[in-house]
Image 1: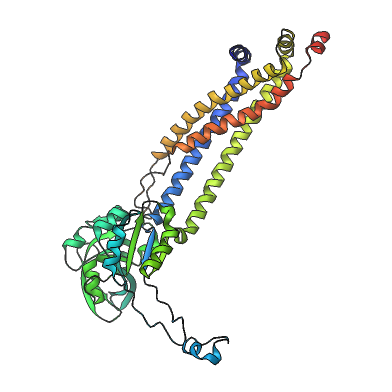
Image 2 (image 1 turned 30 degrees about the horizontal axis):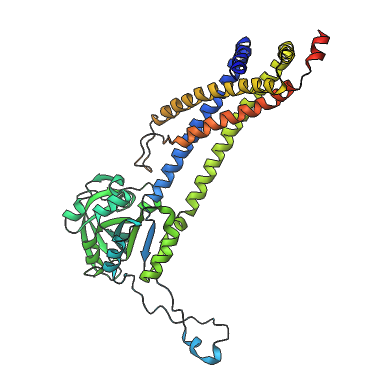
Length: 417
């Protein structure tokens, strides 16, 4: 092996210009592959975080459903018939989760749960002159929301902790505040579905980056939300759960729904379209990167193929002095892998520098308040994938030429000379 490596190095140095061109091709391909994939993965992470950062792994709530058993079904004569009459509505129209305190205590004792955050949601109207604007009020515990869902990261101005300190206060979505022509320190008039009116002080503005969502969202403390809904005690409409392992969400959602007799929704079901978009974008990145590496592989193949024709005498002498066809194949394979290794290493460095450069380019938009530069991912798997692909494609590019070199008959070459 030591002798084969020495011979391969001599052959590469003899045609160092072609070797350099092949290595540059691998460097460029791997560098662009790493930069492109890093940027696309960073973009996927940014887009997913806009939704997933605000979405619990499991949401427990009380879904309002029509009565499962209609009166006509109770008559023996009609049980086997087709029941198209559904006049009886749900006997329980309350959105409150029963025994919420006991449920939350049980969840806190569950080792699979990383944290929980109760919520009170209700539909309201904000009064703006002669018109009323429909919106949603979310009663939250600010500390728990911040710990589990990075709530304060999306507060554009104001102090979210004032929600607990200032009585009858509210945080408005930035787009909703613009619709109401209001700002921090001012008051908004709120009307509940029951017709009760409240005056709340705006203490902060919140922006998720999803415009339609920000146009209807507002947040108050749990105590204020219970006051708006006319409830007391431990009134809760939603229990948001963060798990240690998000992949357990579908199974645990079904389990918790049955155990606590509530409706349960898992994050995989809610975010299915986001995951599909992320997969497609990543697939496109891999296809483009593999295409670049394939092009560079053809360059290596052409160089090694031409080298075989030019080094027929050398191959004949090697075989005449005792080298087998396997030894010759090994030499040319080492040459191909050497180009791939050095070109791939330089490509990883180039890709890292390109990623770092992209990461410093300013990117500011009102719809993405938490982003100041273009998103880039530096996950190790991107660089490992680039290194593996560079070696794999250069090995494939050197495989056919090495087989051809191993089958050359030295007698025919020497006789011809």
